[in-house]
Image 1 (cartoon, helix red, strand yellow):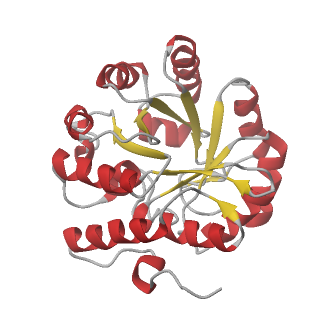
Image 2: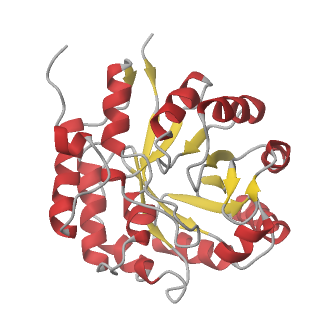
Length: 287
C-alpha cells in the first residue's frame, strides 16, 4: 500500500520572517496562492505576533484577506500567546499553529514568557479554539542559549497535551537521524519541523518518516530561519523534500513542477538564489 504524508509549507511565515526586508502583505499572499496552486495541502500563511518584534510579519490580517482560497488547501497561522490566537481566529484562517519553546531562555527571547506561562496559554487555546490546533515545540533538539535539550523534558511537554497534534521543531538545525528517531519514537508525535543548517535536514526527514511521522513542515526554496536563534538558517526546501519522497514512493499530492515554478518566481522576486537545490536543477524525468 502506498504511504502518504502531509506537507505544510511554512515559507510565507517561517521563510519570509527571516528576510532582511519587510515584504508587502499582497506579495506574501501571492506566495501563499502559488503554493496552494501547486497542491500544498497546508500552507502557513501568516504570523500573529507584534509588528515591532517581527516587522516582516506585520499586516497578518491583510495577508489573509488577500488570499485566494483553494479547495484542498488548509490555511494556518502562527500564534505565541492568547492575544495572537484571538487575532488569528478572527482572521478567518483554518488552523492554529501554536508554538511554545522547550527551554526557558528561548521562550523568554521568542515569546517573552516562561515555559510554564507558554504551556498554560497553549492549554487555554486548545480548550477554547473552534479551529484545529497544531502545537509546535521549538528548540526540541537543541537551544542556541542552553545547548543540548534533555529529551525527557521534551517528552514531558508532549505528555501534557495528549489530544493535540504535535510537531517537534529542530529550530537551529542541530539534530541527527539517531536523535530524531529516538525522540519521535519516545513521544509518538505526528510531525517534525526541520532545518538544514548543518546539512542533516533531509536525512532527519527520512529518519522521521521511518519512525512513523506523517506531517512535515518545509519551506519553498529552503527559505527561513528564526530571528531569535543566531545562525539558524533555512528550513528544508519543500521541493527537495517532495522530490525525495516521490523517489521513495511516498505520496504527497503535490505538483512538483508547480512547486519548482513557485520557488523560481520567489528567487526572481527576492533577487537572489535560494537555499534549495531542486528548483535550480529541475525534476529529473528518468525512472
